[in-house]
Image (cartoon, rainbow, N blue to C red; front, side):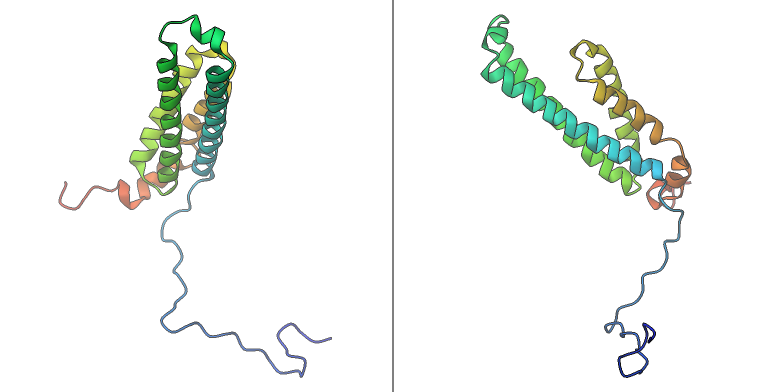
Length: 168
């Protein structure tokens, strides 16, 4: 049986050369991103997707079959549209902040934590709907995950976290 590094004729295989000007990228100089930061982003994306789907389905239901419900409140259609658009914008903004958080931008982590905190407050105040439990638990999880498991140390070592030169 021949070795994997031999041709059928028994000749040694040589590794393929790199293209001209191509080099192997250097190992990253700083510590690796903590798994808790990645988990916070995944929780944010998942909770935002569930919230968007829930909002879209509730909006569709109330706009089509919810005539008796909406007619009992004067001016409720514009309010419903404004709330649905606000939730959609908030969810998309949280997804973008989660992406920037993954790239090591500390300002995005702070804004995502503020968004998660506001989500917890709003979800708690609307517990009677039952749906916000996903966003409530997601918000709590994101708040915790953004600040444990070495996340603070990792953000401290990121280039964006350092003061600009001359600012002493």
